[in-house]
Length: 148
Image (cartoon, rainbow, N blue to C red; front, side, top):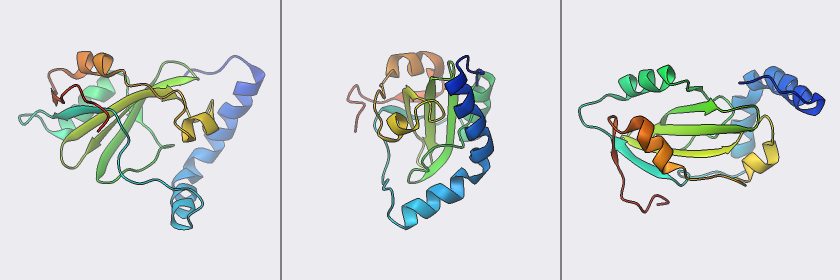
């Protein structure tokens, strides 16, 4: 992630650098206690993993393209991997791979820069064409109705 320029964003950056190791237990406890709710899978279906490709190989490819583990994220039903590629401190491309081979992705605010907007999914964009351009040899694209 790019180091932010403004003083306010730098404070956020250092907060998240400290908090990230604690995020998974805080997230899971908050869900278990009903403080926050999250079920199912988010919108923006890209397609399914090509039958001749493995999820492991796909993850390796995505890492080569600049994606990395996304620790500050929901863990969705049957999710294998959650990866992101930040464009700067403010925005990221986020992709998930599921046990059934489904691949979903979207463009959004980073939780580090705008945690409440990120949590409420404000500004989340499809960007399927950009994802498909990148992964066209790795997945079988879904029909154009990408918000199943």
